Image 1 (cartoon, each protein chain N blue to C red):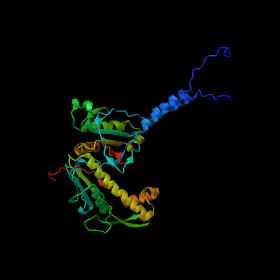
Image 2: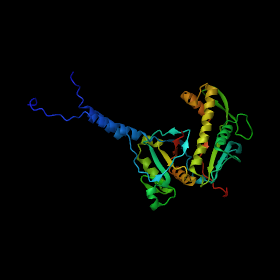
Image 3: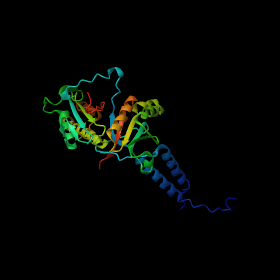
Image 4: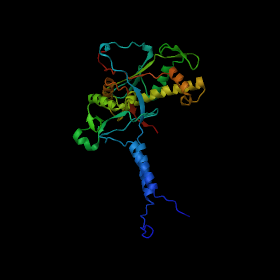
Length: 197
Length: 143
């Protein structure tokens, strides 16, 4: 009986197109907001009994970066622009000429190279802000510091492994370079300016 | 030539569509703050979106300014909070994760570039107290 009574079929050829459009719409809207940024790990909260013990770090091993409420940046004792920060940080982290006012160079055995490398393994970069500092400036400083580290790591990749960039190195080589230039940006306790220390 | 039967093609594509709708998450919260993220050059991508919580910081959107004023506010999950409330939020969010994902729990802070650091510092201190130690300063890539 199916043969005799022919139902005119609904033309569904465009349904595929419609659902394709829906599909593409969802693909576009959902993949748009991939989040990116600077990852940081915070230090553990202080235990109650050690609140007053401050970590003793030699003065030459610390690079203090201070940003005041008017968003002026000081590196050490000088005012600095964002471009200066990168150069100062690189000079500080590397201490190529073994200057007495820059961090101590200590030998560290790097397995992947099979030899000791002189590195400033105890250096710390500390960024201190005022409560009124704007976040954008703080972020720009953090970004400049990461740039400094990344450029040094690229240089190390060239020097030790003759690769053009850090990202072209094998995982083992990357690990070695990370040991040579460990990223040490302190997220330490904020200090109040002008208060007692 | 016999025509190919394409009547099941829409069904196939609908299946793909539903699959995508399920696995990708649309933005769950409606933003109540306006923020213009800072720009940077050395950004990393967020590795695990599923084990991440978001904290938004900025001025209230225009529609809400009459009610809440124009000061910088912190938003989590569709409401404004004060910094200390983040402690419980972080604990609750981390509790919902599977045991294997807990070490990767990250908090992404999406803040306006004009936000005073005081607020950010408060948030960071609360996160430290709650042992949510992995964080991310969300930003836009510089063109």
